[in-house]
Image 1 (tube, helix red, strand yellow):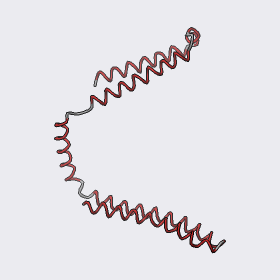
Image 2 (spheres, rainbow, N blue to C red):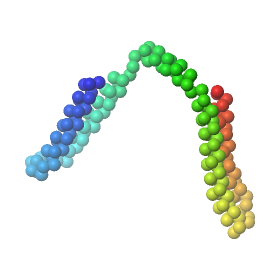
Image 3 (cartoon, rainbow, N blue to C red):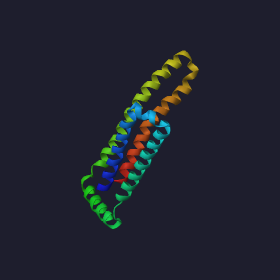
Length: 151
């Protein structure tokens, strides 16, 4: 991992040095095609970045048996401490869905009353939109029931 840190530091340093060099107008005038040089620098940076990230990800892959043992121990420890979280999740899903439904019904209901006052034949359509807004609360309740069924 130290090797990756050193390699990425070298790449960043080279990029900064090349940036400082090419900031100088005289240096840019000496280069026959600054656009090609710039594309080459960007290509080098991207290639080195993806290489470093790939090597870092590969080096972080743990040993399978040791990782499974650590995961099982951590899961057992966490399971002792999270006995109340499903209830909090169920309460939040119902409560937040009810708040969202209340806001939606308030907005659509006000618009529906305005539309019905101008055109009474719009009653059926506006009730449909208000009913769809109320469905948000039902979805939250269904999620709560699903959460509590797993406890």
